[in-house]
Image (cartoon, rainbow, N blue to C red; front, side, top):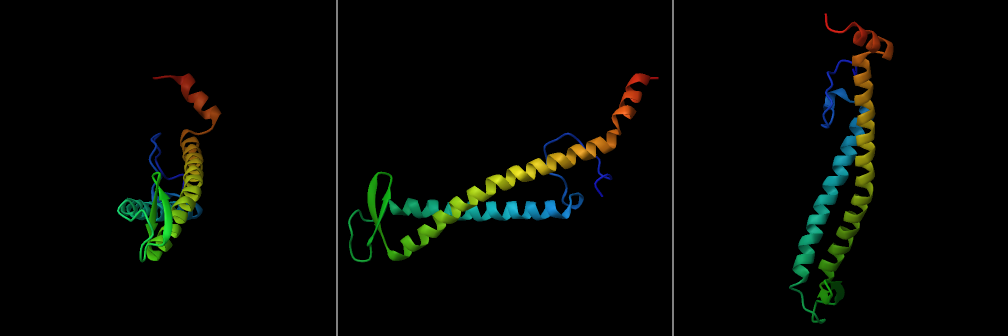
Length: 135
C-alpha cells in the first residue's frame, strides 16, 4: 500500500487512501479536536463581545460578576453557565490540538521519507546510478 504511491517533496498531507489506519484515526481526531476548538472559541468570542453590552452593576437577573477588558460586568445565570464550559472547551482543545498536529506532521514526514527511500532504492543503488552519469 505505501510503496505504490508516487511521492514528491511538497508539504501537503498524504492522500487518505494511502495512509495507514492508525494515521487516519489520528487525523480524524486532530480535525475533530480543532473543529470543536474553533466552534467553542468562536462562541466564546461572541459571548465576550456581548458582555460589553451587559450592565456594570448587579440588577435583576444579572447577578454573576465577570471581569473583562478591565471592567466589571454582570451576566445572567444562563450566559455565565454557557461561557464557563465554552472557555474550558476552547482551552482544552488548544492543549490537545497542538500536540496532535505536531504528532501528525512528524508521523507523516516519516512515512513520506520511507516512501521516498523505497522509490530511490538503497544507498548503493543510488551511488551506482550517479557514477554512470548520462549516456
